[in-house]
Image 1 (cartoon, one colour):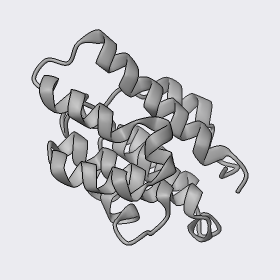
Image 2 (image 1 turned 45 degrees about the horizontal axis):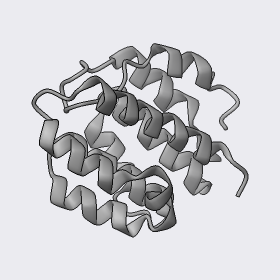
Image 3 (image 1 turned 90 degrees about the vertical axis):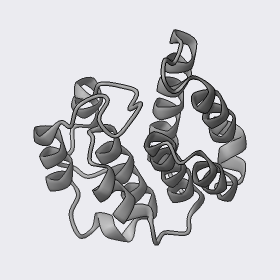
Image 4 (image 1 turned 45 degrees about the vertical axis):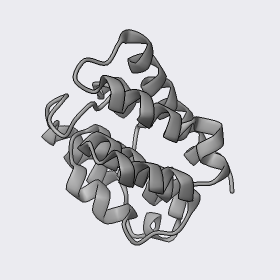
Length: 147
């Protein structure tokens, strides 16, 4: 974890879950804090890059989040990549990336949540919103675990 990132403060500030590219609104101050907290030493750690991408996504910066994971090959990056496409409404592509995440997809149920989200995306029920929040926090915990 980058020493300059107060992850709990970032998590407290995020408005979750991200349901679309514009909902909730972009949080430019938080995006700036996230970007400045990850340095060159972070770029050598795929889990930290996946975490940075996930946090940027949740803060509303989809393009930057996508640019980070686009060329990565780890299951963690594939899972974040799937979330990005689910948020964009590209459900087929989301399922592809969740499938590439392998066991992590089985654990966090990305494909299942994508199917539920696709059915309810215009008006997700509170249970689905709670499940998406649970997925986010479980993925954050996973990305913080030692390799």
